[in-house]
Image (cartoon, one colour):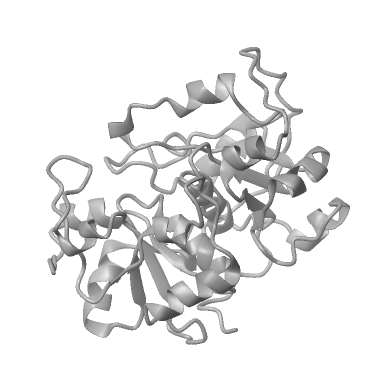
Length: 309
């Protein structure tokens, strides 16, 4: 299967080398099951990167302190971000990202598994961010915290946090530009159509303009030439597990997306979080995609042309 672009060699660390100690091979996939995580928990770092829309009025960090996978730490995608822009959770500089990982004591010398308390919301974005900075030995817990609970594995419900891990040196990283698209890239592509822009916002009414955006004052609609694939359509159940590969492939191909094409795919959503779920699903199908980091919030703020239909 042809991928949209190839990762730069020599960045971060080798997925294969770091994964040799694991008890079960992941076969080149990013999704891991709760059983796999439980079996390999002593060999991996576990990171809760749950994120909620501001309108939900949920405190993911507070929830983590009283209900988490044992030994996990919390990564706030709103803080490990570019703090000098009005847009939320945009990619930070390479140096700030590296310093943040060191402060959180995330050991990137071993595999890292991300999870969310709400399916993939947050965990997919963290997975993509690490990969964007060249850290490839990263995985996502399929179904998130609920899958862990449903499998009967233990939760840490104490408010006493475990002692932080040993200090670790995070290697110098740099951003792989091929992972990211900007507003200017999207505008150019309206004319050239050299890339396929896939909009992950849910429900689909946000795409056609029939449903308002969750953020006040933000119009709904879509960029000309883009395609709607709501991230919720990728789930096989209400607990947020990803569809099986065959079902994912059928869903994507029924929308007219040619997975064998060399035409690059760009994913977008409201603010660059849930479109990472779409990029994760595409990765499972063997296709790399880039993300429009600012996504719809950036697009409308810059007066990009809007289609409503």
